[in-house]
Length: 458
Ligand SMILES: Cc1ncc(COP(=O)(O)O)c(C=O)c1O
Image (cartoon, rainbow, N blue to C red; front, top):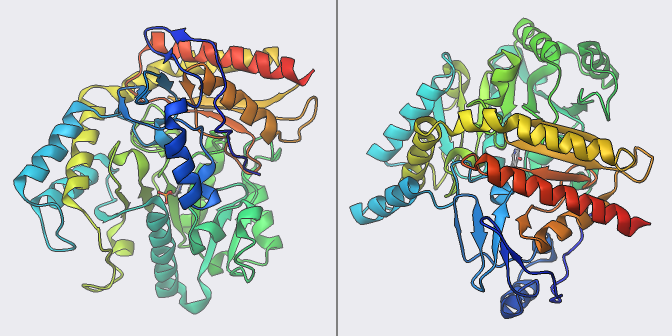
């Protein structure tokens, strides 16, 4: 799985609309030198995205330096929820640089105090402590550690089990990847921790049985009894879809965690900060987790992540023993404060909720027209996905998903490379500041790309 996009320029039709402009061959011939430098110096793993050399990005558009402009349905990778280069965020970062403080490790700062207070305010009551980190994987690793530490405190050395989900993704570091459920990604680990297991994710497509009984049955099959489980960590929606679990399932899970002193962790690294039309995606389930992992959309820009949770779990470590070098970097803190305020004050979360039907209806229409190759679609707020399969089967098709995305790139619609356990999903995630007209234009282009990709199969 995972292909590289060609960096041989090809002639493509010119595009000139209010939201998209393509005036050169693609990739732009003048950008080839940069692309080649990157290919020569970086590992092959970095070749995964459409070859546009970003020059600047604003709102929901990305520009190269050669006159091309893409309507962005990527947000990088679901980062720029408040929009690219939002003025309030840029001003806050500039102001922080001018203030003379750009790094302070774990020494206290007003910026960190302001951000953790804001995060505590937007988190549900009861989740009172906020620990800032840098990457999403760092946040999920930390949550796993906190859950295990809590488990040991409650039930001794045997209560260290961590339950993740098949096809789940929590990052590319050791524990995050072991907790995730994408088998090919774990080959390098070899001696997997037997206390980290996966259950089938109840999406109703790849896993037909969506009952909570399947959770209980699978745990038993994996030889893990409730008293040995320290934590359950799920993406609030599985990124591949977005695929939510049934509400009832998660409510039963919450009860089961309470009954067995198990820490319930929602990984909101991708799902949080308004993406689904609510501040937190777990609001759709009507439950509150014990720990929330945050990242990506928290700043709409600079690196920052974190864990928000119950005091009893978060306060497990004494002074100086749970830290990270860039914890609460003041630039990132200012960016996060400005981004969260934009999401709330400009009602961008409401915009995501209102535009959900536009996104959903369009991708459902594509799926209906191409039922043979679109196995499943889903959308919530401003995140949607088309899971592409081989003609008339339920076998994932990375190649076809890739082809659709490459065609979109050539027409001025920017999507990131296919995602999912088999790289089968064309994922749609525009900035939450997008307007209806631009969203509709992008979806129309996407529909045309699917038509063309299907025609090319014949
Ligand atoms: C749900 C989820 N968790 C964790 C991560 C890891 O975040 P990072 O790449 O910042 O380490 C990602 C990244 O895609 C994610 O989608």
